[in-house]
Image 1 (cartoon, helix red, strand yellow):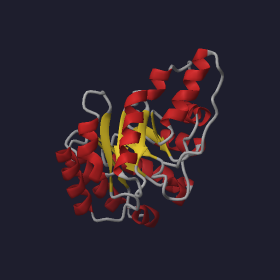
Image 2 (cartoon, one colour):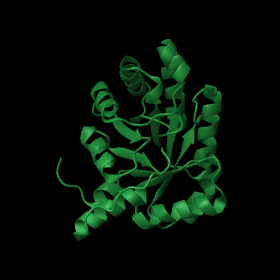
Image 3 (cartoon, helix red, strand yellow):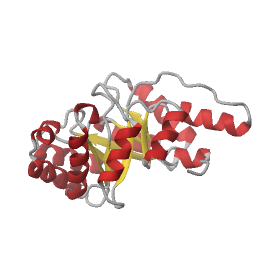
Image 4 (tube, rainbow, N blue to C red):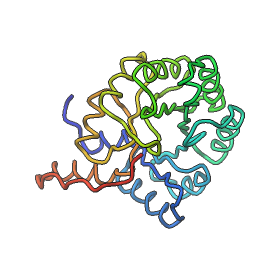
Length: 238
């Protein structure tokens, strides 16, 4: 893979602002980090969408959100309703959690129907499907990726970051190999430093979900300035 610039890597990042305990001032601080570093988007809690849209107006940073988060077990009707409200509030991308239990049970038709309903509700906006790979074996990850494609989603995504595990290079490669070129892969969960971020991109991810945007991009900026890597802090997983 050719050397990536700071702008290249920033364009792959969905800056995660999803911890349930975050206060409004903490959310604002994270929104400001996203704007400062020029990441592609923020992924915020549904109740923060409208505020994020207002605060980020004019920055070029898009606002996305999560659907059925973090367990994926809400009804399809509830997920569709969430999407409708998210779009009304200004979100332009949605990351839905697959019904993990259905996927593990082999209820493939139900999984596809759930995904397709969310994709349809998104009305042409980007929809990503979170598999929560820490709960799945390789067969289930590959099948979940194929079902994501069958449901019409634009991305298959590794993890919520709240399921006890995160992205691995091996899982990203497996997901990339399991879908056609029309479906992209998002790596999220444990992407906390530049080395890991670049490894995920090398494995086939085209989007990164992380709360460590400043760390990742700061390391890259330091390398570009000749100062050397800055090192990584232990940001929350996502």
